[in-house]
Length: 309
Image (cartoon, rainbow, N blue to C red; front, side):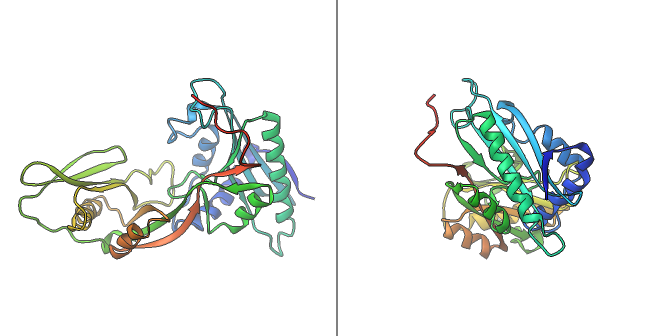
């Protein structure tokens, strides 16, 4: 019979292997180091707004035949006025990973069930106002519950979690396939630091901005990601005038910069309901990797509504 217990440091290699199996099913060629996993259990530095609101963190593992076959990381957010209203007094299964049942791991499904029961028991002990769930692993492009993880979706749904948020499409493109940079008379490009990375802004002859694109080339920091070299993502893409080719032109400028950075692949994200935007990216060299469902909530939807400010 599988057993559930708190994470021990001696589990770090098996836990990292399990996490990397889930990452690899979403974004090709990406994996994280043991150091990345251990650091993420202590804090989430990228979540600089919400991470300071966390009051407690718990990591649980399910062990079968002396092997870690499932794991989960839970957070409890403080209930004081400093915490955002939607997070105040809530609890979250930040991620849940498990090996699908197989002939050589006949106890895997039972282990996942026992682990989820332990997660719900921990949330109950915390007496949180609302129970949320996600699949945010410490790797680029891995969040929500990706459609590449049907076994995790089944665990969540069987436990009473329901998808209440949006669905996003994760796309990937080869930088070599992106548009080539083209000259436009009277247009200049200015490179600055943007909110999501390096910003390339196009200005017309009158000095007014025509649009901008931001690319983040730091998502593959070597101390965090051992196999994500040459990967970047689009943090923002805005054009002032639609249907004049500026989106393609800006991507061409970004691609030129990314080639100088040694970047080979680039990620993009779109709302699944915005088919026009998805089609545009498909036409510019991107293809769909997966879809991911963000925002999971446990229990009846008409109770424990967010508190007011």
